Length: 74
Ligand code: SF4
Image 1 (cartoon, protein in one colour):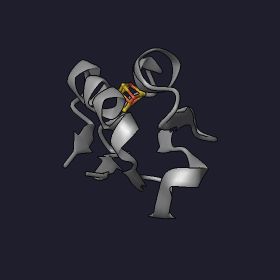
Image 2 (tube, rainbow, N blue to C red; image 1 turned 90 degrees about the horizontal axis):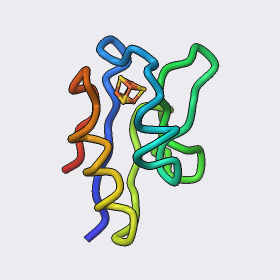
Image 3 (tube, rainbow, N blue to C red; image 1 turned 45 degrees about the vertical axis):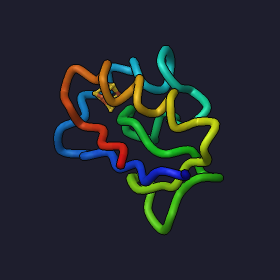
Image 4 (cartoon, rainbow, N blue to C red; image 1 turned 90 degrees about the vertical axis):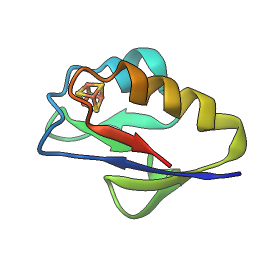
């Protein structure tokens, strides 16, 4: 099943773990250094996206690794 991914921009510190290390297929660095959902998966907002089956595991790894608990995958 595809999964919904959200990034809380107020919690994100721009550490880069999600977009550099854990899951660069889903996350990218935004203009302000914070994490954004990659454009191709965005759903109307840089902080909200829907990712396909094959990337759900990677997105969940980023959710688990985020030191700010800013990522939610559901
Ligand atoms: S791992 Fe968390 S705090 Fe770090 S850039 Fe990604 S969303 Fe932001």
